[in-house]
Length: 300
Image 1 (cartoon, rainbow, N blue to C red):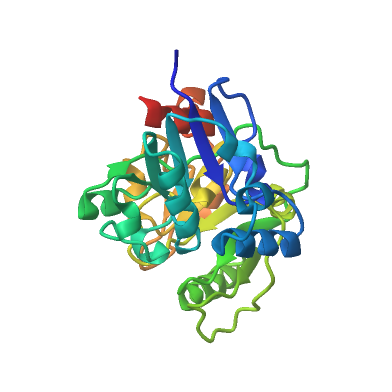
Image 2: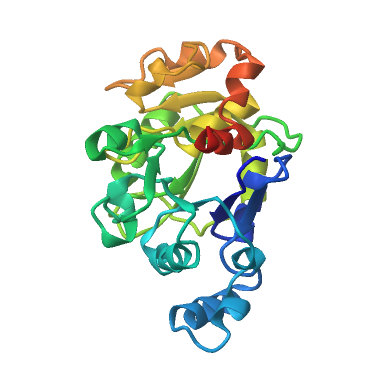
């Protein structure tokens, strides 16, 4: 009989990433019960302080079941949950998954919370640096774009994360060359003063509608990051052009010069790149990065 695997994600707003067919022995669930932001805040407070009936009041129903393997994204905000899981499942294989760089999560492999857990990351550089295991970024082929007319040349969506000045410069240079740009940048703790108009976060369904109108996605990684971002896989799964600062992307199996433009010190050749037709990528290559195959790689 196959081992029972649980993958815990943060909230119901992320649910669409994990929709689709999975084996019966796999379960995907939220950490806390779904509800309004106020209700979820109360659940977290109740859980962190171990008030009466804190498990039943705060946690989704997964904690009542048994699992051989539990995968959870590692973040500072989840350390209490990880500690609970380690105590609740002392014989289970606990995998802590870095969906962001180690530095940006601020939970380093020598943190006591990581003891007796397997550490995996999407970033090969972090894997080499910290001696942890590698698995790719993932996406879900069951997410579909609405039908929209392309009215945007280059689309960027993301938090500042120290990229504000670079994003500002890229937007100026792209618009100087006549490209129609749509940048939706949100503020965070690393925001610096720029001419960018910072906006509030938007629901992913709205982001997909803007993406459907876009010819190309701009991918600007944070400093020190090598792994694939979600933007790269959106471009791959939706057959969109990709403009990226990730120099390592040329080493991936889906890389095609007609589909992916690697930014260096200049953007010479970008106009020609944008006029070239998109070259279809083999289905088997795309499927490798699909969520169901991503989670199976932990089992294998």
